Image (cartoon, rainbow, N blue to C red; front, side, top):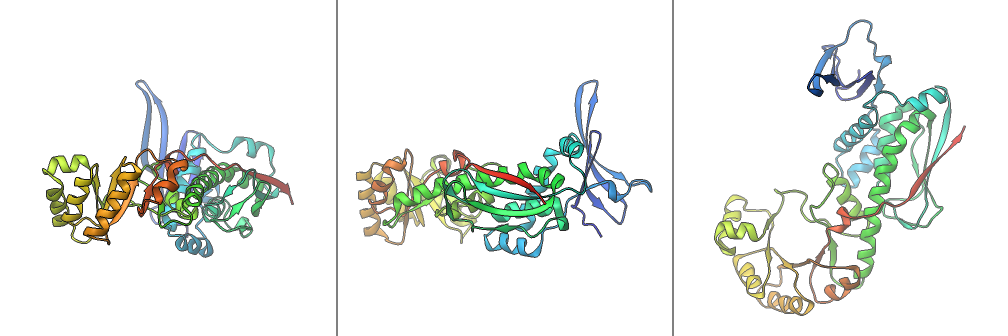
Length: 357
């Protein structure tokens, strides 16, 4: 029995996604031309006797080993599967992969080899396995990664290999490479910062400046690169910034209101002066974020923290560079916040080469 989210069919300008087997219906996303322009419609369409499942592009479920690998990496397999299905559907919105269907026989098989074309850190191999399994299903051999996520590689290193029908491999290729190259770019950028801080007590930490829809994957890549994650969203940790303080009438009142609503989550308060730091610690902050402090101000802040409450964690932010990272870390702060880990990382150049089998 096919699951409710396992199918996509492209017929003309209609993309069928999802199946209700019991009611014999499919969810249809159609793009039509109207007098006022284009209209995008989302409906459920009945499957008649002549519309067989064999005519559909099938999104296959993830294997248990791949689900386990994603879980072990702190990722939700169902969420990853959703990202993959959306990406592949985006590629097929206008119809089938016309080039591959036109040029490649159905029974043609190839071995796909993923290889690095530059030095960097790999992240996203279980996600690539999810792409291959979603598109190819049992027609693919087991996805074999030759290096683990988090591994440093040089140009020319084989990263992974899989054998499957050539048409399906080429349908999956761009989604697989987009995700692998991007996540490996994030991991590579993070590793450069982590290396700069090596030997200090500070850790490079990401922010919420992530690509919409890819936050969990990008934060996973940060971990692969040796960094740590700040909050995943707006509810697992409170970050009291200047606008919150202004609205609440002060740091202490802002902290009190957050604690009244959420008694157990960590609370971080952003400050701009040493006096602000003192007030934040006195209010009960778990963490304090410095905005654009100089190294001398950071050292003073660390001394104040150590005197008032050594358990409070301190985070430096604003105007930081790789060149200045170590000097900042040596002031005694616990974290260095770097938004560019996710919002400005360059992709790592990784290629996919096919060999007929």
